[in-house]
Length: 195
Image (cartoon, rainbow, N blue to C red; front, side):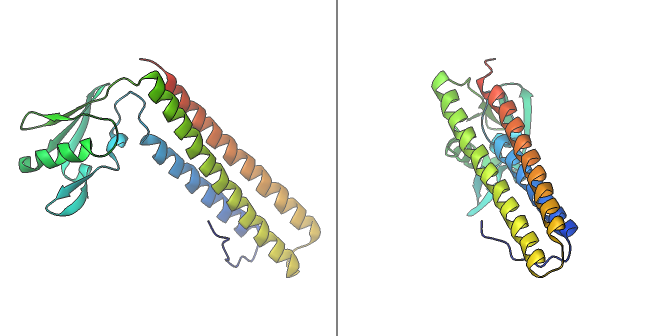
C-alpha cells in the first residue's frame, strides 16, 4: 500500500478516515478467512470458484443454487443443467482439495476431514493472512500520523493536539490489531477442531 495523500482539515476527519480503513481491513480479513477450509461445509469455500460459462468466467453462485444440506456436504444445483460438467470441473480445478460428483441434476461436494498435516498447513497460511492484515493496519496508522504531522507543519493544530491525535490513532490501531488477533484465534480453533 502506498502512502495516501489526501487533504484533511481536522484531526477528527483523519481519525474517521483511519477508522473506516481499519474496519474495511477487518471486513476483508473476515471474507478471506471464509475461504479457508476447516472440514466443515461453508458456502464461502466456493466464493472464488469461476465456471467457464460459454467462454466467460462466471462466479458459481450466479449459475447454481448452493446449499449445505449437512455439515460435511455442499450441493450446487445448476439452473442450466447443461452446465453441470463445467461446474464440476471448475470446483475440481479450484485447488480446494475437493472432489465433486454429479448425478445429472445436482453436483455434490463432500467436504473431507482434514489431515493433521493439512491442518498445520492451514494454520501456517492463516498466520500469513493475519500478518498481512496487521501490516495493512499499521500502514493505515502511518498514513494517519503523516496526515496529523502535515496539519501540525501547516500550523492548523497545536503540539498538544498533535500528541493527543497520535495517542488516539495508536489506541485505534491497538484495538484493530487486537480484533484481528481474536478473529484469527477463532479461525485457528475452527481449523484444529476435529469433528
